[in-house]
Image 1 (cartoon, one colour):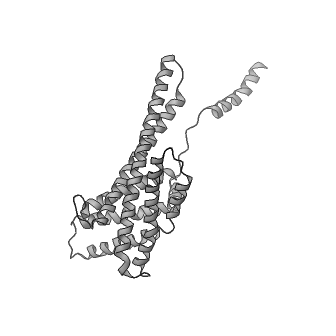
Image 2: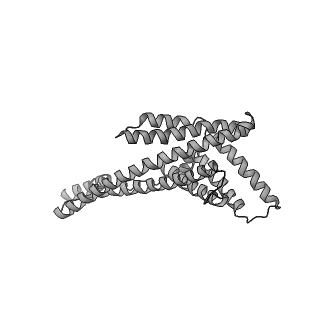
Image 3: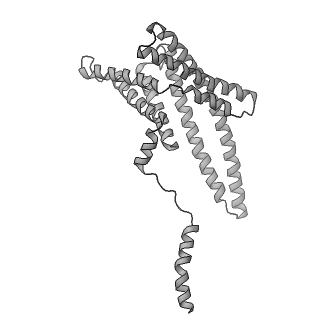
Length: 261
């Protein structure tokens, strides 16, 4: 009787142990993940950005002779992709308005930086709609230069504010990281478990890495905006340098969007 009961309950206990034991997070199916990524406006935009700057690098490196038919086709492709990317910015300024509305600020300095960051980027996206209309032929091309200058200045100012805010975020993350490390050291000294603290520390380090990548991306984009303001004149503002900066920004933003979806 006893042996029969133990035999009967064993599978139930094993099943219960499997339920209670922590399971590893399921990996996303690649094609489902890709579908979710391509469904996002930013996902398609960043793939276009990679293809555009890959083309610009090939053209700026002077690897291909000017007389080669492929060179002309690449120039045409790069120009078309540039116009296509501007279409993806229609209405995108609204996300900056909403981000500013939903933000909470710890100080007046942070409020000013947020106004610069979101206001600059929002104005950039708003003006880019008219730049697209110029490129598409609906607005007279005589307005193109003024609109592009306004767009470039707004973008540059927006990135300056964004980088400043992200450095403040990095300082906060570093402070939280120190506190968690201290808690882990105390727990180890007392012989207590500290799995939750270790998991939190891991998440903080991951967040810190992503924030650093965002700073690099914003710096690369700010460099490209500066090149537009100065019409490509100045050190590190040549076609190849700017193309490499564009590719770096595209790869980082693609990685961030891929992880987030």
